[in-house]
Length: 80
Image (tube, rainbow, N blue to C red; front, side, top):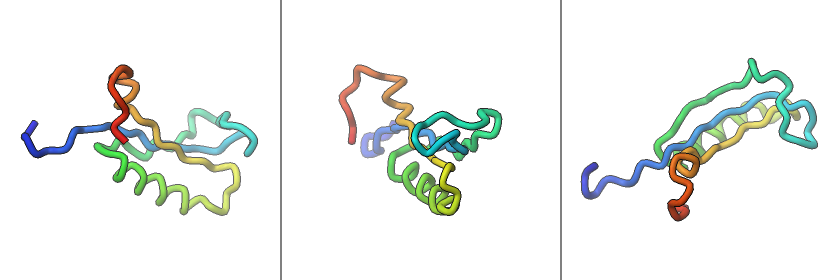
């Protein structure tokens, strides 16, 4: 990695229709929308915001950002 390059912090953006707005259980796991994996939180948040805005009229649709880098190295200090 180049000396001035920022550290790669992988984030997954995905979503789908929930059974209820009261929880986070998905109605059909086969229909999850995997938006993508991003190298930093800013890019992941932008993708999340675009998908969330596009489904704003569907109350049971939810999108999430998962900090994959925390799962890959759980003992590392938080980066943001």
